[in-house]
Image 1 (cartoon, rainbow, N blue to C red):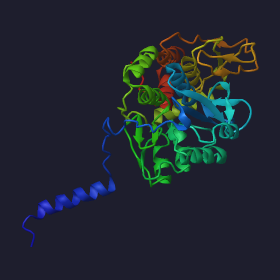
Image 2 (image 1 turned 90 degrees about the vertical axis):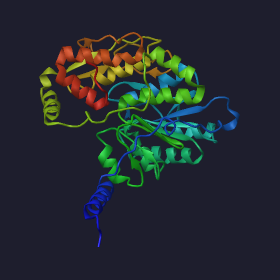
Image 3 (image 1 turned 30 degrees about the vertical axis):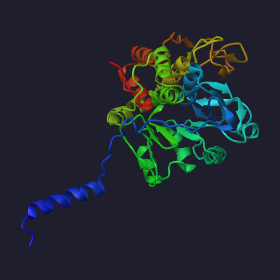
Image 4 (image 1 turned 45 degrees about the vertical axis):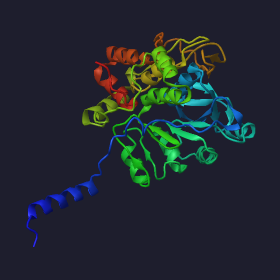
Amino acid sequence: MDRHPLKTFLLTLFAFCIAIFPFERPATAAENAIRLPTFKAGRTRPLIAIAADNRGTETTDLVIPYGVLRGADVADVVIVSTQVGIVNLMPALKIKPDATMPDFDREHPEGADIVIVPAMHDDSSHNAIAWIREQSSKGAMVVSICEGAWLAARAGVFDGKRATTHWYAFNKIRRNFPRTEWVHNQRYIVDGNVMSTTGVTASIPASLTLVEAIAGAQKARSAAARLGVIDWSSAHDSTPFHMTTSRLWRFAGNTLAFWNHEIIRLPVEHGFDEIALALTADAWSRTYRSKAVIAEPAQSIRSRNGLVLVPDLSAHTDASVVTVPARPSAQALDQALFEITARYGARTSDIVALQLEYPIQH
């Protein structure tokens, strides 16, 4: 007979709780450190391919890694689309890719060193998933941004590894891909040759972490200083990001009040700051009250780091004009949220920050 029944009961209860509610151990800095393999084909710096679906690719997920990595000048960065033609970003902007996936494969049969996977409108895209799987099989590191995790997971690159994604998709993706250990409360997770991030704005710290892995801590600090970023660690609190009745009512109220909807025109010229533009356009297009557009007469406009922007066709002469803030780039989101609060109220800026998984600054 057990002489310590209470002790036995507590140990059994503890074991049961661990089984039902698995403890998520926070990763150490060493675990989230990126260890890049030798660059392919005798390259002196990595070739980074950012995947894009022409029908819809998340604005900030694509533009921020492009801007950070090109701005730091630590890699050759190309945007690779599923097909020929303009890439429609969501919820705002249009851009020209550098190559299609078949063109990229012909020019670089050995594959990319790093593949970045933004969220896409069609997260079951056969072409995108097959290409990601093939690049991974050739030894590329795969980095999913936000709900780009769906495509990476469907490509099989997270099997047996730790990963994360946007709060809204977290429980669903965990049910669909049980072979992956899905982790809360970290902005990004690195596990071997894969990296994943939480919400949209985690693309900034993830991109700076890539800069650090490629070119060292000093280069990352310089890039962060130019962006106005102090911390790019993986520390993150997921708790505030969840749907509430109040937030549901705000989404519904803003959507249904169609008579109050408006177009926001963002003036842009050659040499524009693509990071500040993406953050501003993304935020204003998530209010459910407004849509950001680029209404310029030029057929295309090139950013300071080479991103080719395609303006919207309509002149939108009656649109309200919002100026994209000057540098530091990363602070454009705080400015946009401040202006959204002034225009539509704090409850609207709250649902914008919620979608971006951004801890709003008070």
